[in-house]
Length: 329
Image (cartoon, rainbow, N blue to C red; front, side):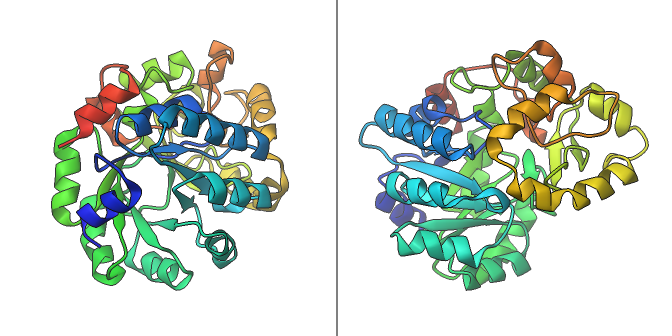
């Protein structure tokens, strides 16, 4: 599918998509503002009730423009599927390839994209029924499935995608980055950290400041309790204490994360805030929770500060509308 067809089908003015950021960072205010500016705003994973409210709010703020939903495969509930199918123009599944949830969404008439990092994952995603693909590069922030730079992965995945639309994520901070990915064949580019650093983002203010001031990110498994995935973050007291010998974190913490995966899939997403409250930098038991506005400042030192490698190039907090304009080639 060419870029013009993809943009026309979704009625998008700009080939700019806001990445899904779970945990409440991208509520209706952020996603709605991005869509109202001509891009595609995305509501990230939350508990079903909060997710439904955020989608409804995003649609109201976006007016007639579309919004997207982002669902993390291990934590999907039937209510997420129902709300995404009814209220989102497309749904991106991240953190796994699931025939079950892809089929459930498509049976309700939803357009489903699956995030992949390799050619092999892309083949599996297409076989599972994906309507399109999101290629994530290793430089992206947050929950990583990418294993190499997006500019290396994208051409290989385009070879197997055929006519399916392919979006690209990772390393997107400005219009030149979007143009580079479009020139490689992506129909749109996805930015996360740029939209984290907006006025509408619900991230904790100190989290935003820490991202802007960072010259380093880590791809670690330290924040894997309940979800043993690689996560890209900026440093805080937790990583400084536990990732000094290995960026991945202590071996025993990684083993515990793997053992806790079944519990994580069963636990309600609403419990994330409670987990963040009892985490301490001195104790290597860290969930994927992130610090939101309203939490105490100390939360920034004991939760995951998700950010991509673009953090070192981003030095301001701006309205989401301006972020869309700055990213538009």
